[in-house]
Image 1 (cartoon, rainbow, N blue to C red):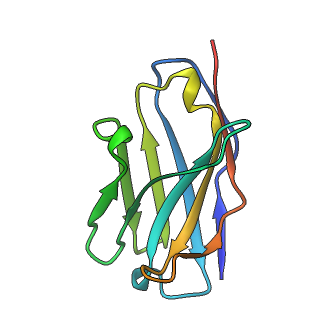
Image 2 (tube, rainbow, N blue to C red):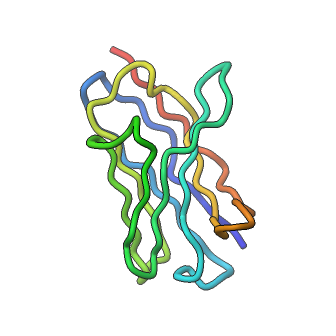
Length: 117
């Protein structure tokens, strides 16, 4: 199992960013794609997830209205797009394979997103 994420991003405040996560080594539709981030000096923060089988999503309340999760089963790729970026969104963003009751068992390498003017 491998999850390979897209490269680092630098954005201005107010812009949007999309981070991609390409999965391999398992049946993509059988597991969630979860998104977690870690800001400098802070703990892990769960952002939300998508079920690639039907596109159903769940989202942490603080991101509602400015986050979009997508999954493409033809390419086994999940994406997260975050809009209206602010400096507090500066963090390393991770995708992970979600198993439901057994949590997240495989993780991507992380993508640094920096929001700065």
